[in-house]
Image (cartoon, rainbow, N blue to C red; front, side, top):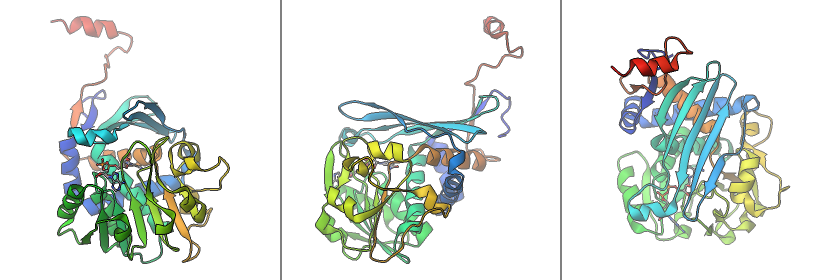
Length: 348
Ligand code: NAD
């Protein structure tokens, strides 16, 4: 428990405090810590209550709720995806999340999750790459240089020892921004003028673009044997990044099939197309990369357990720090049945 001043106070981590926490722990340390937490939860996958996220679609975007529970704690994330937002000076993805105690049902943490989602998505990508990318991979093509891109790059550096990133975005200003942010961070950065150029010599190809349509960021002829594709951006019905032919040449790894079949690259394939669940690779029940000729594809859409792990990591790491506020968000009268009396006494 996080030493709240009353049992009814809920620790709240604001955006400002999340950023302080990241700097306090150290970005790469935190990415490694998050990847460990997520990996441990993937190892006990079968324990979790799992459901595809609940999505509310509109013409311009999607708003989603992502719940899960391990029987002791319950968590959910509220997250949106609005590709048009950037042109209006807003984030494509924003989020917040909550943890609760299953025994009492009381919330135990409320946190911003825009920053935390970028961190957990990057940690998950690098965790998957650890199991699926060619051994000793040093170079990544990073296609789509928006909000997630630096996090993706630095998680690959922290977790699998990436040394070089080749950046490409349809908007050169995004590439300039990512290159500037990655300066002095220990990764060699090359700015590229096309997706093809960004893939030269890359063992890992990350696609992280945002467009509410079935786009073809990667065509079949761009993909040689032996690479690992980390496909992040296709995460909604009608929103994909890869040509279907690539999927037929790849061994496909997913988080939770009932969600990915609707939202991921594999929405382009038949319902019975074989995929491997990432947790099975991590727990040793299935094999990841088996040959240097194989094309491995992590068809990432983002799953509730990753958010749950990230929230638990934060709850643990704010203990004893000043990086949270106690939030008065639960009515908790001394006599549990006297809620009305509590209201009456407040009128003084
Ligand atoms: P963003 O809007 O900040 O950046 C997207 C970038 O993609 C922009 O710079 C844009 O110019 C670029 N782009 C668009 N079309 C392109 C193309 N054809 N080729 C090259 N670049 C192109 O968005 P973001 O926050 O970085 O998120 C990117 C995507 O990742 C979104 O679709 C989001 O929904 C998804 N996402 C997935 C997960 C997950 O867990 N899988 C988590 C977070 C975000």
